[in-house]
Length: 150
Length: 140
Image 1: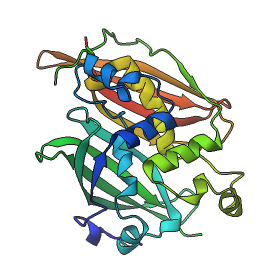
Image 2 (image 1 turned 180 degrees about the vertical axis):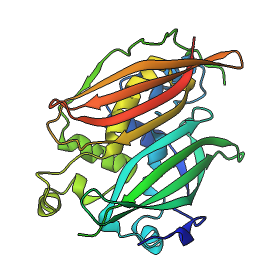
Image 3 (image 1 turned 135 degrees about the vertical axis):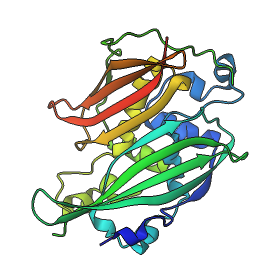
Image 4 (image 1 turned 180 degrees about the horizontal axis):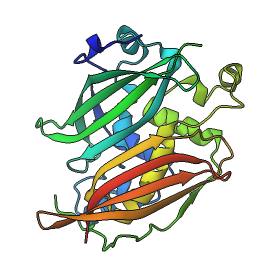
């Protein structure tokens, strides 16, 4: 079970590219049809040097950041983890071709009584996404819920 | 960065054009797994999902968040979106048809700009709400 001693620890940081292929894959998966996200001419007409990434581009970190081992190193049981959602704050659109540095930190750990008995652990994370000038382009706040034991 | 996507003129109570997506397919869920790198077998491996007690594989919450983001970005203009907050409140299964709805709840003046807070829901064909979301952004 995770405890407050993990607050401040790395929660899965990574550098990752927002490349045209991944933007296209995300666009196709969500069936987005606005050409601004895939067509260079459409992007330029909208005032961008390159196609922008759709709003949920931060999920593209998935291929790059440490996963199961890191979470287990924080004391979490991987098989009992639920993703409750995420909040993103955007400073500016991110474009295909950019490189992102993401720093993810454990910010809080709370215990809650589960509805069906047992104790749930809520682990809160903050991820700061920076561009190659070290300027913040976005932040993500999310919570992993470790459900009570069987 | 100059954008031609000017803020949308909106008032409190205005509703986004309704967006209906689906039926969700296993192939779409696999596309999303590949795009984002989330290979949790619950989303693509029928045997693992059913052994764990689920009726079938189910979609990533982030896939639904991505589907809803089309409505958010299309309605507000993506460069004008300041925040997007999604809560996963129910599972999405292959075959589901999802309806995305949004409404302007509040508009505040911040330094001469009008900043709207909009509430969104994604609802399955059964009426279950699977995502509740909020987005904030500049409106005209």
